[in-house]
Image 1 (spheres, one colour):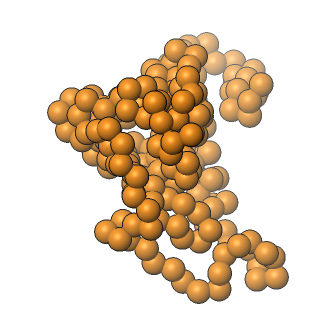
Image 2 (tube, helix red, strand yellow):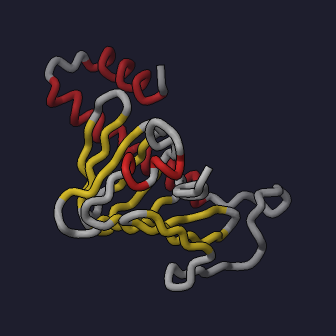
Length: 173
């Protein structure tokens, strides 16, 4: 059982929530708490004596001059490497669908890249292998484990900044 399910089970038992609406509010609150914890963990700069892979100098990168660009049918990923991490900005054109645009390159049943994304523009639908479907819109932050398909909804390109899952995205295998 994952940590989120354990927390929900514990909180549900403690407070005896009886309605689905209260449980959904609790899940939303738990998600926000997790985002705050992740942000705090990512923003903590360990003491210099620890070997973190971070340099001692400030860094600045821009997607205007990415370190690497990968084009694929109806899409593009621009990557910058900074602080020992790869951050990707992906642009998906109307009609893009992972299973038709990227799956032939990845040669996997579904997308195996986990994603931690900020959605800048456009709308995307994501269908997890377990059947869960979510729609992401501008301003949303999504955390997607591996095992999903995704597609653009509507006539506007979907643009996301991905802090986790683009290092091997859309590479031929």
